[in-house]
Length: 622
Image 1 (cartoon, rainbow, N blue to C red):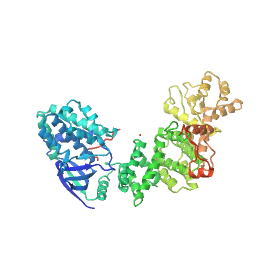
Image 2: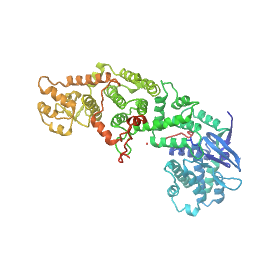
Image 3: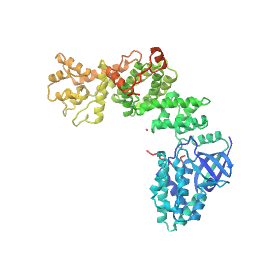
Image 4: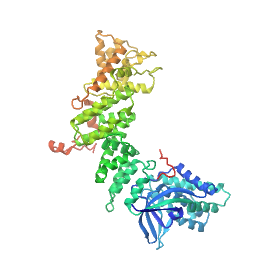
């Protein structure tokens, strides 16, 4: 590795040099807190508290050394600081122009615009991602004072915005233009004296360590070493650097940059979570203490980076189903069963199961898992979490090792027994039968005050009734329902218990108001819910007395045994005809694989109607 490092003042940073942000660098993300910190650092030197101020190391890769008098660098580490310093110096130049300080303005301009040996001007700091940066700099330098002063600060900046991606850049300009204006108003110095003093502090009193790598490979290595402490760049940003380093642009086509940008757009702020769950889904087998980036990097060292990028892109589309499931409309991305399960996990923030879900989706898309086995397994996972977390109140962290060991096994080494091993491993974590019965007896809901009047109580009761209905129904389906209290809902704690609850259509529920137990049984017999009809049939004969606690125990036994007895390869179809009809209306039906098309000898029919908080960083976070 070859590079040189030296202590320098900022004036050497902005001395006939041009800086470009590399493709793998993240966008400008500093916020008001960071801008204020840097301004406070300037004031510490201005009032004599500090003689100089150190802003850290800046790592550069020299692409072209002294070409026509200008050196060209790629910023490896220091983008946030270099960009912010440029914005401050430009804001100073702005006000110098407004105060008719032509000489001082030109003296400041040299730190913003580099002039080569042919008298051509170049903006020193530019970014392909933040196009508004260069446009605002040009406006400050080139627009006459008479034009600038007719505008407000906000209107001047806003009329030079080129992209919605530039909000942080735009807000930084507005912040410093206003902050410097306020400083002028509060200072005993003249405006020009204060502006020159601030400029000279930045240029001469701000120090940094310049690290210049002599090759792109060394630059990227230094970049990773400096960020290995984990507080600077996130794993997905390091992964982006790894991808960009491994896939070079071909002519004017930058495939890696385009695909990565599409992933960022599709995931809408979930890229970090995706990379975390992707690492477990694809590579982890245990909690090894390695960062998600390092796990991925080690697994792909020496391999074609294209394969990694294409796999990331494919899995990111699967991940969109998990973080933003959509059942209907042009953005539809799920079947009814997927929507049910993925929405359930999303609502309850059960993110740790996502690596397994990624593996299952991929196995289905490859045709390794049949639609029936795939959907049965999704519903098992749904039911398991109902028993384990919602009823049993168990901590989800206790199944982390199972997720780590089984997700990548499903993805990379699937066999017929792998799925059963996942099911058995999860079932082994369920509470004991007696503990489960005890936890189940605490479920209930009531309109009246007491221990069952919380919305979370209602949610738990609805989920339990839905699971029971799905297992008892011939169609394996359960539509929306209201909660019916068999014995009237009142202030009695007893009548709020789960053993006294049934799913019922709203219209039938209203008819039950004021009715006796026997009269309600007749109404229950009209219900479309198997759980409710079965209850009516059991007690209509008069041969069996109804007991809330006895029924609760019976319900708990039924759920517990169903989960323990589930086998993916033997389970009955749990997706009802209603769901199938919904799938036909919400998603185009066509063979999943080419093999399906060849075997069927038919072309798939195409129907015309079917034809993602600001990041808070410290001063040295780059």
